[in-house]
Image (tube, rainbow, N blue to C red; front, side, top):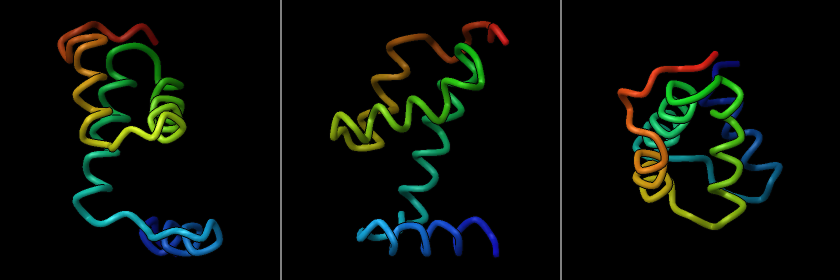
Length: 76
């Protein structure tokens, strides 16, 4: 099972739709921004926080860019 198949099955179990190709790309960009601006653990938690707050992925990515610029040195 590849990642997209797993995500589709997981989404179905959650009672929601799987992310589109574009949504998945933005979520991955958000995760990368968080991980590269601090530590890797920030990636999944940043995505979870955005979902918990009800913030759309693209907006969450913009907010993440304001927290720490992408040229910030990673800490771990």
